[in-house]
Length: 265
Image (tube, rainbow, N blue to C red):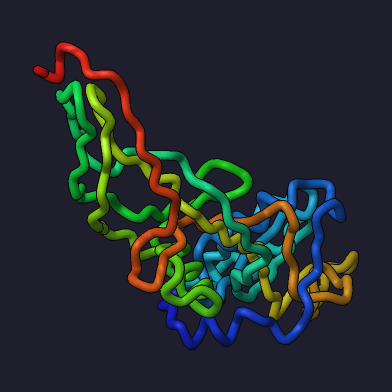
């Protein structure tokens, strides 16, 4: 189970004390998948083993569960062990226009001589989606990662973004339909994507030397840095941009078509 997440903890971890290092391209395996396997929503202190020939990482049940079980004596090449925790700092953010969707009922103007204007209720639901860069599930705890990303984004976007807070909305506007036409309203919503490159912070790294002696260090594979990311490993959080009233921003578009037999004019 992932540890509890609070806004205070997220605020404290948005800007790590040490600069993170991009390890993409430095190993013979896919480091993007490695980071996504490690940082699947967890923020608590964790123990892992890694096969340094393949990059496969596994939760170390002996260290994380029994705290000193049988696997303590089963560390040999290519297996190494490390421990630490994940943070999910924001890497970038951008806005875009979402798909145009219908947000009102239709208004039928059967008249042949005048246009028809009427107040129309427009409504919908704000959206929240989360995706990762490598595809598949990788054991992602989606409800946890949504909470982590949502709390972190609140630092910058507060009430101007609907992420992790999808809900219904409605408002009223006037629609004018020409004679012998059927009209309705659509919306092109303004959306925001916030991208997070997860970082794993290594507290302790253990391997065996050629003499079979366990060596404990505080950096990733003895390379002088302890905070690692892989540039191609990221989560994208996408949601509506909100106005000061909590309604989604966007462009309303009036659409219409000619009346036909189904309109019973």
